[in-house]
Image 1: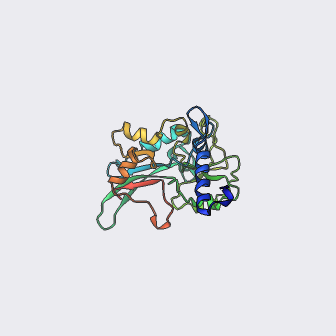
Image 2: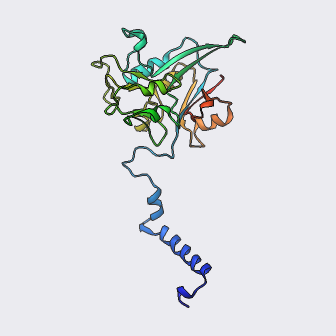
Length: 253
């Protein structure tokens, strides 16, 4: 019986079987076609299989400690607010907040930075595409296409972005490009992530100070430290009502 004379159901089974055989076709010893289709090329730096994020444990964050801020400044080459001529124009990569509940008078200390939203408002309003989100969830600004309109600064609910006003002669780092008139914010130390270090300057500084209030890692990896902590600890997202699916989660607030 020819294939055309077979019942449709049998033809469909044969087609599926053939497709499955092709999908698993070996194109090199130990390499299957379907594996090539889903694998990450060597020259592709990021993948949506990862979702980088940070957990902030405010119960461990020390009041008056600014080691995370100082470490970020050193790693990324921006000037601390107290060292700038106009603190109101100082970079806002990361800042410490000291909060107090008006009813209980309980005080909480925590760092605030770009929350690396899955649905970032800054990206939505950017007219040039300079604000963008990588496949691995890190939100960045391309200084070559940023026109300094500051729409993203107004759209950010966390006041986590700032315009570069300061001279960059002595502070510029080769792997952290900045530009006067461009907007910038926390990058999750993307240069360290892309080097495979899997951490950030603020996390390292917090651990060195003995607080261990910050944990960074791949939230998509069920076996990562951050994923395990997110499953075991009650956490909150700042302005969860906005449904932005933040990459930064807080415990103890």
